[in-house]
Length: 408
Image (cartoon, rainbow, N blue to C red):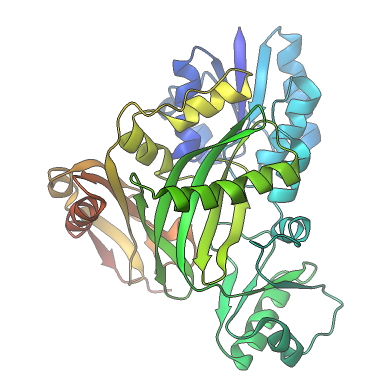
């Protein structure tokens, strides 16, 4: 039987949809997981043909499980992950046990923000940055002289906006360096110039050394204690010059990394000095991204990515073009969730194609400190991007989280 091994999955979003896509394509799906809840809720994962409990941070343990499957004559076509930080681990296992169409070297660099910055340091799209090792003694004056205020202070292994802080003053800069230093005492701290400008997300597939932009998505950022992306608008009518500039950056990146095949997304910001790369991730974006692309263009990006990973040519031809906006719902209050109301009304709102509510009753709800603290999303279409945005926001306003104050 032709099989695909997936390392880890979320309950919803692109990673879960990838397993469903693999089953639809006729593959025997195997999930390696260390998530006790998923093992307990095994019957809810009908698209997973075999779920294996394994320490997904232990490469040797996973090697043993792959070897056991091979001894049972399971024909493993690829080993993949759509979850940080397992993309590189999956690629290493794929190198050892399958034909790997990805580049493990490129993935490893991309998963580390410091290594990515160093690798692309001479490119015009790379912002100015500094790295502070745990033993370094660097004055805040020296940092400000080199980068100017405000300064982004972050961990090189940060994901989902965790441990990414904006220092607007010398006092904040010193405080945030100390906070991250205390939290991860053996880890480097990264400092970057803050880039003003509109931010986009670029979803891309590389096939036979050619980069294909799948979608250009405008991001709406809510600035609280962290930068949280609460809105995504798929840009259907992208001006040629705008797209050409992004294609140039993308081509430069894949050429520098030497990528022949792969999937990635860029977060990139348009400054007064041109496009500046905020970060790269060697996978499709999580959350609602696959459903957004499907609503906008009529194909499943995770399905086409699976084809790429097994050596087939992906078909990225739009079946239709539709303006799409996704609104994420966050909470301004902290408390225990008693109930959620408004889902039915939101679902019936004009243009709405999907409403997803993440937390169950009894969940602790908090104001966002990471992308994981986004608790619902609404995907809506419209005759224009503005109308799609209005439709999504109108529906989102119907969703209400009823909270009981947390006593702790």
